[in-house]
Length: 118
Image 1 (cartoon, rainbow, N blue to C red):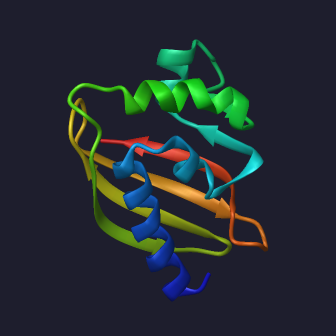
Image 2 (image 1 turned 60 degrees about the vertical axis):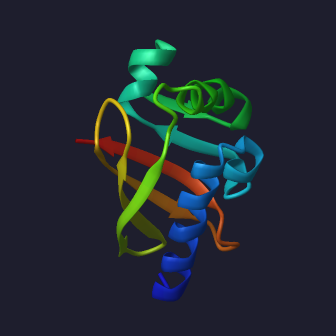
Image 3 (image 1 turned 180 degrees about the horizontal axis):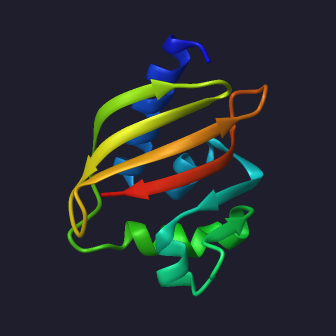
C-alpha cells in the first residue's frame, strides 16, 4: 500500500463522513462491498455483524449520520498494510476512539471494511 495514497484517502474519508453526504461517503466503496461492525449486530439485528452491498448498508449508515450529537470524526493515525489501511480516529458521541480496517481493489476502492470501537 502506497503511503501517500493511504494518507490522502484517509483525509478524504474523514472529510466525507464529516460532510454527512452519504453519496460522497459511498464513492469510496464498490457497489458490492462488505461492512462488518458490532453496531450492525445491535442496530440492524444481523447476528453476523456483516452487511453486503450499498443497498443493505445505506440504512445502517443513515442511522449513524442521524446520531445525536451530530457525528464528527477527527483523524488520529493512518496505518498501512498489504492492500489495506487502518484509519484510527476519534468521534463525538457514545464512544470516542475507533479504527476501521479498509481493504482495497486494484482501482483504489474499498471492497471490505471492518470497524472497531473503543
